[in-house]
Length: 175
Image 1: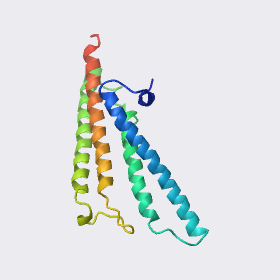
Image 2 (image 1 turned 180 degrees about the vertical axis):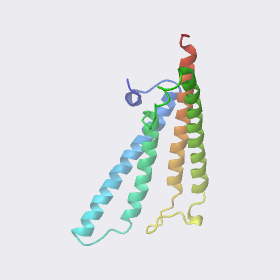
Image 3 (image 1 turned 180 degrees about the horizontal axis):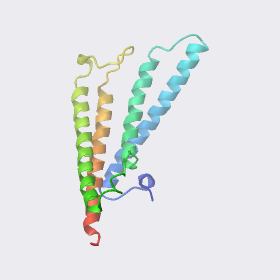
Image 4 (image 1 turned 120 degrees about the vertical axis):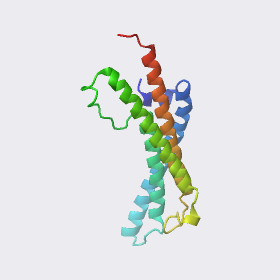
């Protein structure tokens, strides 16, 4: 059963806790995608068929896209769908790839955590710093927080995946 299938069925331990977060992001991303598509379709029809552009349609579309991206980041991490280069595996011994897997996992989690921290820190300023959309003046703060939370979840998933990998390796028979 793939990780995506287990998303629906639930999981155990830390996976079960993260499954709820992933479900929440998936629902939010789906709703945001519907809002974004509907906004674009209505805006195009209004502009070209009725010659009456909708004020702020670009703002709504852009902010909905941020939510879609945040949900996609979380789901890709959950489903292990991020880009991986397996060129090292065929060149170096398995013992060396165990070390590189740990280093890559820790670097990935640290990077995601740092990005989350930066997004929360920058998003905290909000309107006083001019972080608003150009026409509707929608404050960017909740969208920074959505992306920050997404990267925080990714950092957690990477650490859990790394811990699980290490537990399976320690349980595997030597050979």
